[in-house]
Image (cartoon, rainbow, N blue to C red; front, side):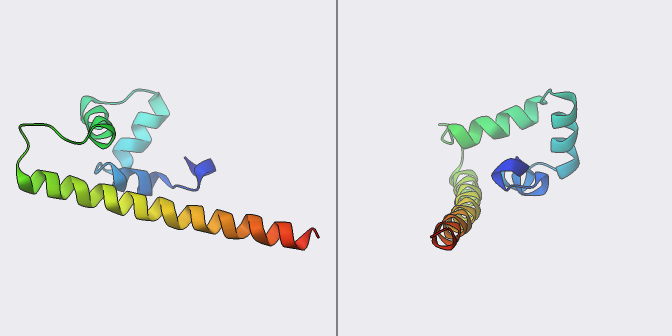
Length: 88
């Protein structure tokens, strides 16, 4: 995760679990049903039994996560362009 520029806290926030829960899951190499379900919800976010408020909450988490990733991608692009310009 850190190689992609994301902290454990940021990823935990994206999937709406406690940072210590995610850290423990990563350390032991196994994910609880709760964490697996949260990850599944990000990958396949719409279930027919979800209420509108649950869908809105989920959509807002996904938007927040994508915004954070977009900002990191922009920083990487700027860094690459700066390095390219400096090497000329």
